[in-house]
Length: 260
Image (cartoon, rainbow, N blue to C red; front, side, top):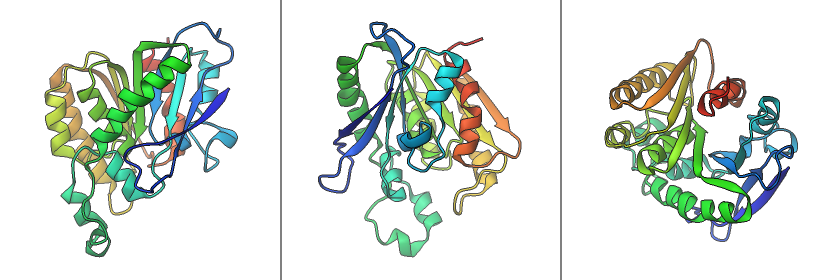
């Protein structure tokens, strides 16, 4: 069963516009059983069928049923404009992307990035308590997952909120906020589990496959030195697309939730 909530997010730039949050709890789990909760960024792509906005999502509802994984999912739709999404999923303003998107588009915005902490504080201190009150959850078993910039904001959350236990960062847009993200991770006290991956043919706009591979390697090098328990996978020929993340998702869930 997927419930739909319409919520106000402080980072939303369009006055009065509410964002869709979808909540999935498997119906084969007793309603009185507390479940861990996985919060998903870009939630419009999280599910299958009519619950995904573009007809091709991660199908996490189907994978949870197939794996018989007792897990709740809270999927938060991202901002419809891709630059607003970038603002929301980055903790710091980013001069690099200004250079990447070109001078004419850059002129249309006074800044780029830097709204991530406002978004994640809202998620952890407003949305999470609402979910824990409305549903039977295990409030101590919290996970976050996202892809591309959703992976970047998931890694920031790993470094910022010690209560988070499970983090998935797929096809991380590590070229964004790389230096400040590395600084945050070096200071992190994360004691949970982290999953990361990348494909060898990932591209998005002016960002090349080499950009993705090189910056992910730099990030993973720092994570490996930090002592964080993590798994990093490189998939040959995989592209930057929902179809790749849907394919890898059961592997992610098995690792993060200790399924054999």
